[in-house]
Every structure is written in structure tokens, then in C-alpha cells.
Amino acid sequence: MALQSKHLLGLEGVSREDITSILDAGLSFKEILNRPIPKVPTLRHVTVVNAFFENSTRTRISFELAEKRLSADVVNFSGSSSSVSKGETLIDTIRNLEAMKIDIVVMRHPLPGAPQLLARYCDSKVVNAGDGAHEHPTQALLDMMTLREVRGEFDGLRVTLVGDISHSRVAISNIYGLQTMGAKVAVCGPPTLIPRHLERLGVTVYTDLDEAIRNSDVLNVLRIQMERQDQGLFPSIREYHALYGINRERLNSAGASKDLVIMHPGPINRGVELDADIADGPQSVILQQVTNGVAVRMAVLFLLAGGNNELE
Amino acid sequence: MDKVKARIMDAADIKRTIMRLAHEIVERNHGVKNLGIVGIRTRGDHLARRVFEAVKSIEGEPLGIGVLDITLYRDDFRIRKTGPGVQITDIPFDMDETTVVLVDDVLYTGRTSRAALDALMDYGRPGRVQLAVLVDRGHRELPIKADFVGKNIPTAPGEEVLVHLKEEDKVDEVVLVETAGKE
Image (cartoon, rainbow over all chains, first blue to last red; front, side):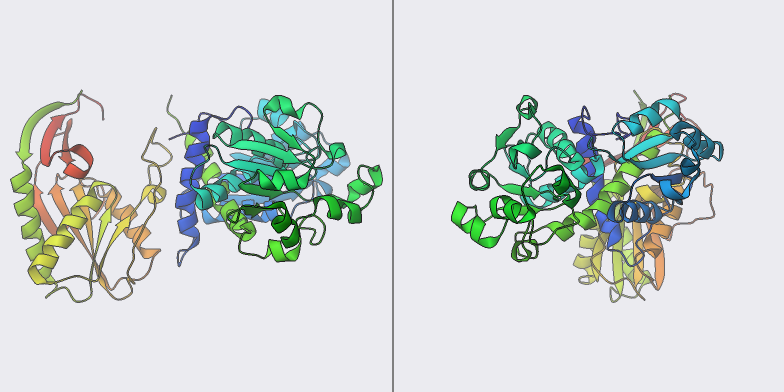
């Protein structure tokens, strides 16, 4: 039951058994969230530091709730208000925290690979809460937990990630995780937002949204980062919406399956990548994703903390 | 492998014992009104279902049957090497002001029962909680006592009582085994 991995740095290379353990445990933890007293005493002995060197609302709150529901002690700090702004290195910062006896570090960092670096130099368990454009494993796990709830099996399930793939850590983690579990992953977006050689990962690449819609059981619609527009990667928000925006008419005219599942990792730019009629419609599982985020993060923390105590 | 020293109960013994426990539960509680039965995963769950059916055949249907997973409430979470995976607790009836009979297979140190009581209190406020076990093997580490006991089996250090049930182990029996210094 204990995980093979000591940390959760990404989903690349994480085994099917480990992912299954996390998703199974996530389902049990979801039940806790619906109890009259939604809290268990399990991680009373564990102290977690949420180190966010980049802005985040949803992920940080989701992690903090997961930690509190498990009765862990929680310390939060953000890059801007910490000694990092005084020039301290990342490793020094975390080593100082460790000297105060902590067990798990949940970190978001703008630089890809920062959690790997941390894992190498500190004794705590490290959970990656997003590192640059690299990975965001808990987001992919909550997406997978939601998909398993609505579709049951991953084998042969056709999941298409739509939007800005180049800058998306959500996309990369989903590709690794879903492929490990047996799903068929595709991406769709303007060529300027799709990394070259992505086919090498075994991913189908669509530039035509209609074709992608026709060949998908699930669309995971990614957020268009408005700040990217200055880089000239697509002509205008209006044009992006016309070519890659998802709305009812588009799904109908493209011949979407009536069971098509719509996901979005949030925050949504309504009327850009996703219209309100779909985001709030019956095919959308967006709020279920948010609930599952807390459950799956509880599962990750619980399983990592359990592994911490192996009596080898 | 653990060495089996004695077979203490067979399928017929277990069946008779469950029927007696059911009678005692009904007698003590003056019927089944306001009575819920909750099994502690995994074998306590199967036993609870059998007790539930037995009670039903004697007196009519109790309020409900539930199952409790106590993995997250254990006090040895920090020191156990492996354990059962955490599973779902499901108590489909409102426990407030009811009498809940907790069912487990073996009462030993009392730590499982302690964890089960904590877990139960997070779901509601039962009016009364009673404990029914198939086997009491002694060696308590906490001040906990069962209300209904199938069989008292005094054990020595190095011995363990294993309850096997059809639902998990293909056979109904209670055996005493030697654990060869595992503890």
C-alpha cells in the first residue's frame, strides 16, 4: 500500500500501481469530506510547509484544506513575503525550515525542476504543486480521479487536451499519467502553442478542433494565459476563440459524442477557451474536479507520510 | 508460516454463537427499535451482516447496518510497516440517539475498539454504544470491555487467534496459532 515513490515530483515514471493506490485512497478520502465532522486524526504527527513561490489560490487552498482535514500542522509561506526576497537560496530556505522539524514540503515554484533539486538536498518529502511549465502532478491526479468516477476505465479512453500545451504543466502531467493508465492522449491547439516533437511521447496532435472533438471522449480545456498574447503566439483573443473556443454550436457542428466530458483545470476565461453554456452545462465536471482535488491531495499526503515510517 | 495449535470453533460453532449473540443483543435492548449494527472492517463487517440477519430473524429488522473503516484513526499508523488500504466507511442510518452495536472479530488490546469509538463519534452522536465480539482473547492495554462475547479464549504470548470467514477466507473457523516470535 505504501507508495514506491518517496516524493511526488511529477507523474513521469510513476508506476500504474502508485497511481492506482492514490486514486483508490482518494475515493475513500472523498467520503470524509461529506461527513458531519469532515476531519480525521491521521496526520497529527506530521507538519507540512506550503511553500508557494508563485501565485496560487485554488491549489494552495486545496492543499491546505487537505492537510487540515488530516489534522496535520500547516505552515504557509509565499516567496514574496519571505527571506527569499532578501536573497536567500532555495536550499537554504528549506534547510532552515527543516531545522524546525517539518515532514513534508508542498512547493510551487516558477522554475522547472525546483522540486527535484529540493528533493535531492533535503530529508523531507517533497510534493510538487507546479514547477514552471514542467509538471503539476496533483492536478493530473485529480483530473484522473474525476475521469475514473465518470467513465470508469482508462483503457482506450480518448482524452484530448485543448489549448496552450507549450506552457502547460497540467498538460504534461496529464499526458504522463493518463498514458501510464492506458488512455489515448491527444492535444489540440494552434501550432505555435504545441511543443515540437510532442508526437514522440505517443501523443496525437490535432490543429483542427472539429477533428479533435470528433475523436474524443473527453476534452480537457486548458486556460489561455492572457499574458502570452504579447508574445505573438496567436493573433488575438478573438481569433483564438473563433478557432479553438468551445461552445455548444461548435460541439454540435463538429459531431461531438453526446457523452463527451468537459474538464477545465481553472481558472476559466469564460468566452475565450470555454463558453458559459458548456462550462456550466451537464457535460462539465469542473466543480467535481475541484472537490476531488482536496480528496486526491489528502491521498497523496497520507500515502507519502505512511511511506515515511517504513521500518526497513 | 504460522503453526496452527488448535481449531477452536468450526462453522457450526460460529453459526450457533452468532445466533446466541443476536438473542443477547435483542434481550439487552428490549427489541430492535432504535438499534443499529456497525461492523469494523474487514471481518467485523462480515460478522455484523450475519448478526444483522440473525437479529432480523428473531425480532424483525433493526434500523440499519453500517461498516466502519478505522485505518485513519489507528494509533499505530506511525509504526506499522504495512496496513490495509484505507476504505470507505458507510453508515446509512442516522445514529443520533440510537443504540449502536459495534461488531468485531477479535477483542485483544482494545486499541481497535478505541479507534472505532473515535471514528463513530465523528459520524454522529449515538445514544449508546455496545461492543459485540466473536472472540475475546484477553491482554487488554486499554480499559475496554465487550458487552457481548462469543467465546473467551485465554492466550499466551506468542499465540494468536485467527478468525476465518467464508467471505474472505473460504472457510468459517476460529484457530489458535503460534506466531513464532513475530510479535
